[in-house]
Image 1: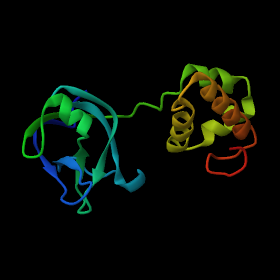
Image 2: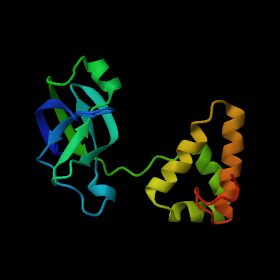
Image 3: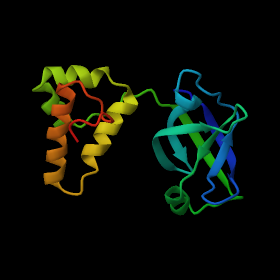
Image 4: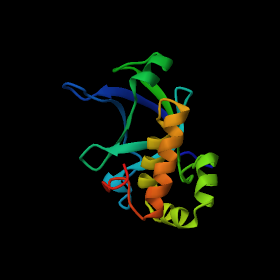
Length: 161
């Protein structure tokens, strides 16, 4: 597959408290069908692999690649440095953990409702369950989620949590 971009970009920083460190990616246009015009990509920054990453709008129609502190530390780069960026479109569907799929398979109405949700809503459920600090909490969250999905309730609906 041909990359969307494969070149060096300058790391810049938005000024002000909590400012992002980013690389402008003018060659890629906003996705008018995606929330906020985001474009989902995967690839690498100086050899550091990124997956399910979003290019974000700058407000002037162009996009930027946020480069988190974790990545900057691993590649030893900061504002003012150049990074080699290779990006591909990320059209992979959301990965649903096998354990969750097995539970959903036992409850067809929950599974049907889960599949009707947007990828973002599905991701919120998965993150809620799998961010638990221990196995008991994860199991409890999984059970509550299945029950909520059976009743056709979205995550932000108050009933059930």
